[in-house]
View 1 (tube, rainbow, N blue to C red):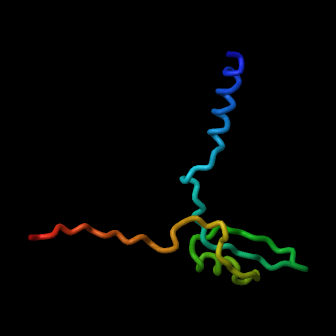
View 2: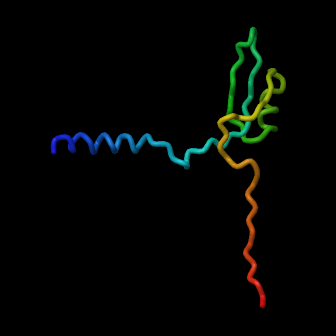
Length: 86
């Protein structure tokens, strides 16, 4: 019985940190900033390519796809079910 007293709080703590599907990365683009001798930074907080390019314009750098992006590649089509007429 004593082990159950420690087991239940430990399981509850593990459940809090378990990954869920609700934590998707919505940012599709990353900005790789230029820097002296390759010491630039990286920002993967852009939803559109234009946002990324506007940020790196004038300060140097380039945009690339976020490797950790987990959203849909394109909008999902919604199909309406049509009833067949006999």
